[in-house]
Image (cartoon, rainbow, N blue to C red; front, side, top):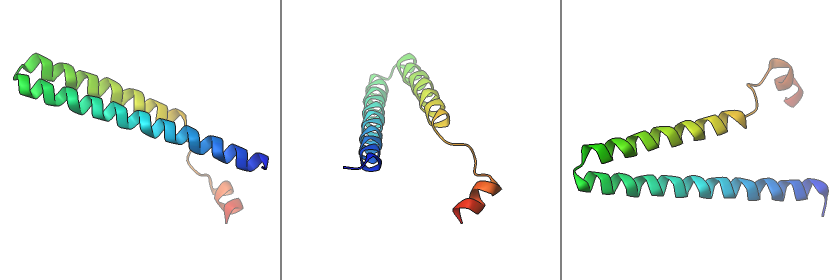
Length: 80
């Protein structure tokens, strides 16, 4: 198999792992929120809200750190 195909397979596998991790995170936060709401405890609800904010911030930072910069005119011309 070519090196390009190996690299593509690796990238897809890594992407799938990241997606699965995000789904697990969201499912866990949903469960925690449901439990906090059911408890009727405002402190528990606030704790879930704080956790959601922290996890959202980490996810946003990871996406920003791994997203190429904005396209430039020179790069756009090369791609055209």
